[in-house]
Length: 611
Image 1 (cartoon, rainbow, N blue to C red):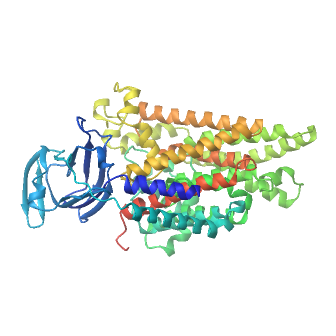
Image 2: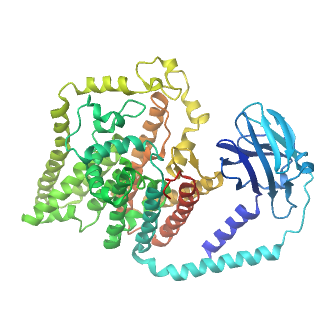
Image 3: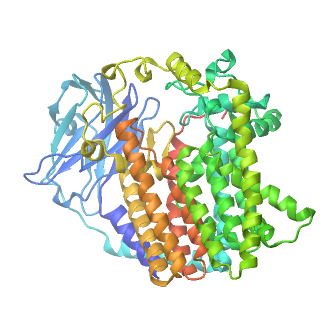
């Protein structure tokens, strides 16, 4: 009943309580079509706008505005460039009002030029709008919009149908509720979406993918890192003059060998390089299918489409998310290889477990630097596990075997350093500085003066106040959105309404989750939750400072180490959190994420020509 009421309220707010826009327009280039609204004696504002991205080749669009009841004026901005568009038809409709149509010379004439309109003329297909600037617009007075019958009985019956559908889904899916059995199913859906994205999206359709693929391609046929001055790796340098081949990450070596195996099965190298991350997500699905206790720990992987998006293209963040998940499971699950190794006898199988777990833990040291907070939190929780042990003998056994794991991890992490040193020698840092200067685009090059460099660089040194980064440049909003569904080269975004629903859903989920821990959790688990929140805030602060002082890149994936901490907290507190309420909120966010991934990610991403 609760879910049914929520669905009905959302139906009213999203479908009945706001206006729908049906647009038919032809444009010469990608741009934004916007409609601003204002009440009586109110100025137009960016806070009151509905918009949609329009592009050549597509003419029909739909989006939503606000409730028209108190709206007095609309401002219609047809495009954002100097040039022309053809506005063929525009309909603004809402239950209880007669539709506002613009589809003829008489109706288009009610649109009064607002700014930057050089000329508007009619032809047989619509109105041609020619702009003299980058912000052309018209104003329409809607104070005297005509009302009509609302159709109350029809809408009540529609809501009853929605409630019946909710009950049907509930009774059919109830068998999957115990032991979080729905989690592998949801993850399998995410896997299908990620694999689809990996196959249909064209080459380099995702953030910095060309440099990731170049690094993976190198390791298809090499085991050692390259010399910094190797002419064969020039394609791996980013516009910043940085190559992933010179970092500490082990992802590119492992992904390169996997891509070599996958090479015969795919038509291009980008797809074969993407398959490693898809395979990692498959491993997560299979693990949660086999290990029931790990399912609650996988719930954080369901709450954002951005997580699945990382598994759909070639990048090292998807690998890091998988490593965090499996490391957390090893730490928290009683029968994991990690805990079996610490409690087992000295025999060959015991050593094999130790080697496998040691390599997994060593990999944590070979992730990107922003994943260090997760490593710190992992170590903190492991230390608390040591404190929980009773008896001197048990603690000594724990310490000795933990030392073995640390030694194995150090061999892996140290081996990467030694391999790099053997190739580039002690002058490595100087060579990296020279390589950056040689390969960076001039606006990102250290050779350029501050006023010649890109405006997103070194805002602090330019005198831009931190408040401006937060308020005018909207650092928090852009970081939030890119953590919950921004696709392509950060240019494919969801609707404002969807982000707002996800925002408040996430707030409710996190308040409930941490509220239960602090209200009902054990003291040590409460301490862990406090440590996780502190590290999360520190990570956010460092990311904000980096955007201000170094490079303005508000990307939510930089904060994904928080995801690994949530995985650990789910495992720690699985006995005190209501599976019913946690499942409800997680599945709700999963449904929103599926919609975002399909409606905006898959439908809007640039596709390969073969599809």
